[in-house]
Length: 126
Image (tube, rainbow, N blue to C red):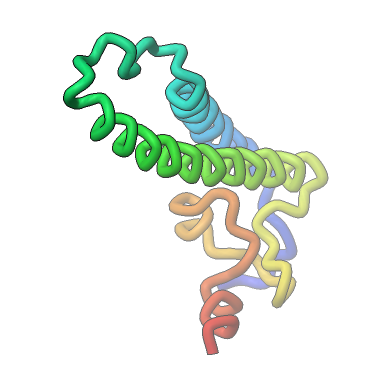
């Protein structure tokens, strides 16, 4: 890789577009999960016969727990994407927080909120 200190404004604009697209999708996904948790989709056990009600309530609790975990992960992902947008605005986007070198463009295309280069990520595992 070359010795550039940061990505160009044009490259940052490209990354911003990718991040905004991912952020839009992530926010829509979160809204689906949130509405599922609050039963606003009307898909509950109120109209179920008493025979299956106990089984469905147990499955419903497990399903809500899983949905809650997914919603928490989605909120975290949204926060990471927003932080990446802030780094774009202050022109520090794409700089590895461990090495200070530019993160490879291919990595940022795959994981646009990355703050570590592959090298730094691998060193963490050791």
